[in-house]
Image (cartoon, rainbow, N blue to C red; front, top):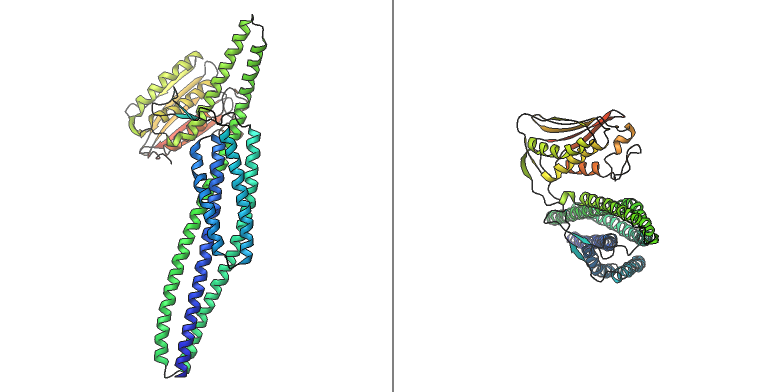
Length: 483
């Protein structure tokens, strides 16, 4: 009887201890999730204001608006969860202060940007050269911030965000330690449960059957708890993977945005300086000197058109995959012949030898015609541009059972071997070639070919010519527009 009572008391105590340990483990896991949610909301807020500062588009502020509503709730929830841990409360206080500094800086810069918005606000204008359904927005912040001012503010945001990340990492590390400690305690209690039951079964011959019955019940409960723990851990791992993936995408987007800003600023600086210089000369010229004024104004128009071309190419690269063009099945032979006829005018001006080698039979393929046309035209224009007078430009198409190949070959200046790995990079231009372009034509062509699940390659010999090859599967699956 004493053994039975002792066994019953021990089992009851261990079960309560297990329930308590399980509660603490779940509590710690909840703190970890809330910490990740807080940091993700802070990154969303900073990315929203950063995107608005870069582009002037108000839709970038949607994540910021959601984040500033979620962050106070998340801080309050964390304060409630760690109310029994003074050390974590102190860390959370530091995190709250840094978070408030981050939000204050964002709010201050956002207020300054909103105060500088043009009286007319956002103006939607239809582009004359764009498709009927396309449009773009003119930012009301255009010209309001210098690159240095924008860079300084981005550095301030980055510094504060890095400091907040360090504090949050320290806070999360303490929770990880507590979680491991409580898991170990939970495992110890389980081992202790088995030991007590084993000793009780040996000592209590009379209560052995009943002790085994209690042991069976406890084992089932432990199994259920382990199952719940595995499911909880699985959900936590899935959530962690999703957060890491989202953070990685956000980091890549920020890096691309920074590269875009740096390259665009570099390419726009020279024409802007030239426009300003010519405009100042016109203003200082005598009223009677109409010829000089006209020449300067023509130069300004030429530079403005060059800047327009650069902006259109940059917008195309940014929107290529999401352009709302329908995939249709076309006959490639007649499609290429039409492009060739349009480009022959340029070849005729330089007296180039134009060679066309297309299959005798029709070739059908599902493509985005306007995009594929631009890729081929870019290659043909480059071939004509960098081939000396009376040189040769050849376009050829070949097919087999699996793929289609379109070749553009020229006898031009060629490309140095050291430059071949870089020619498809944006803004990359060769020193030996003309500096009139922006280095975006081949990048656009490659992005279009990639969109068709294809491959754009080049072979070149210096001073002998180059061959560009567009290859894509005969049954190519055009990638759907990205969100």
